[in-house]
Image (cartoon, rainbow, N blue to C red; front, side):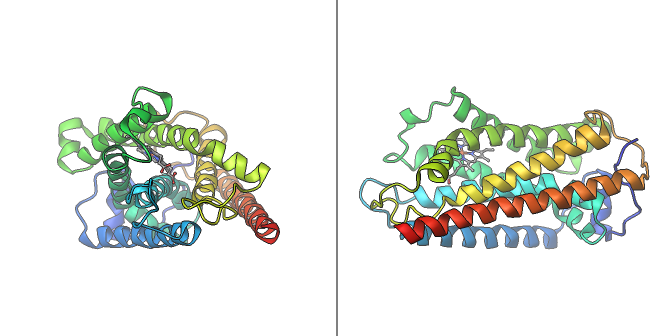
Length: 294
Ligand code: HEM
């Protein structure tokens, strides 16, 4: 039995369309809230990079002024897209966060714009750190990023209300559901191909020597925390698909209240969340260790 829409949660009128899986009318308020969430993340990650590297725009010689800003845009976009993907399970398992469903579309669109802005900056404004010859768009790493950006454009395009008339409700629903999954899949491939070696090296071999580009290498790359979050989101969704839905969700399902499935989903969510916290604490502990022996 499916676990979709398992309880009659109370959401405001603005969230009702989102809850039914239909296009939601434009809401200025919901865009403002989503942009504020993005700004908080931007300030947090920007501040972290500033402390770790001691520069934001005023990069040392040989590094582009937009190098760090682009990193911030990329990682915030990735987090917002992953968070959009997490809102469904949160809504299904917990009544206390039902209001989040109201912002899912807007958070996704704002995250999508970040995920589109980042490649533009990376491709056209980083000639020193990433000359275009070092961004082969046909490689797995950058091809995946490019595919993600193209699907994001498509999803933003069909998120307007008229699209449902053109496409029909079922096809519209299907494209949104699988479009977001595809974006997450290819964005994760892109993100992990680029960052994996940095993370493993930092975790296993201690930090590299300080340089003008990276003054405090004992601090973990901010992408480490974002990477852990993204992996957790993917695991929560996979658990739901494999163990609760037990199908790929190719068709919209009728409302099927099943308290047992909901409980299992909630339990897995909470336990895996504690594992996520433990992983972050481990990274933090390693950081303190490198700091003490620097
Ligand atoms: C859905 C679309 C995309 C997402 C979500 C995304 C996300 C990311 C993330 C999270 C990073 C790691 C940032 C960091 O090092 O701090 C990254 C790095 C990078 N991405 Fe993308 N990306 C996307 C599309 C693209 C495309 C199409 C290109 C090619 C033009 C691209 C080029 C790069 C480059 C060159 C880096 C390395 C940046 C650096 O280390 O400073 N990305 N991307």
